[in-house]
Image (tube, rainbow, N blue to C red):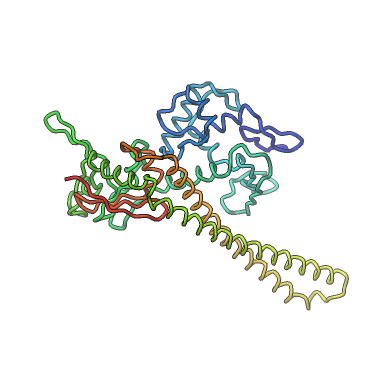
Length: 386
């Protein structure tokens, strides 16, 4: 066990990871703390109620805010220090150990003389062992955290026509990422206009802000209050009990489950065939070593078995990637379904968290019309008040 770094939240016992309860509670807090306005006094409530909204916040500001809260609460790190940095929080969120998995060969020794350790960026095969030890975080929560971190780290142009990049994700405004221009595909940005002491908040195409009408000639500015009212109208129609949106989500979950099952069966068949190939090769090796089969005459058979195994493993890896994509989609749909069930009546005012959770995209068609795409496969055209 020498040289193994024990993750925060665990200790070693008889060569295995076991949960260190006090540190594990801190890990749960890191995964559950979400919005920037959480106070240290709310930590106990958060830990007791794990259905929180980490996924509604900005990854940079959320990790920084979580670090501030952990520090303010005096939570100790492994070193005994109460000083928390964003990197400490991020490393916890990204560590597969907390769902009970172990990723082997993250680093490797370059040579046996210098004993220099290098980070494994693909030079060696990595091996993921599932359920190798007790989990601190459930797999759904962990997977959602990985999806969200990946999504926010890949912010880029939304259209080939976009000349200005999206920029940093805003934790304050859900529309900062999902609202786009129907003409050029650029994101919309929240802007405050001031005239004679009066302030007006509008949303404006980034291309128009940065380049005038050079790349985007006709996109309108949208008054924030009127925009939010239009979105609230759409959300109310979705959240009502007779909304067809819930049935669409349920149908989509059913389709994804069916596809997951088919992929799982295909993967199982390939795994069974690989075991058969391995057994055939072992038998052939036994025949060669006992002299029953000439080694030269067995070359073609060895090659055929090796080629088939390589092909099967390549195909199985592709199927596993597809299966993981389906799993991620199912988790997203389940999150949306759970969110819808939280509301028995229509929402009364604009809700940033609700928008983040179920709205995929808001496209500005004109000064008086927007198109809302909901996560899970549902579109709606909404009028904006003049």
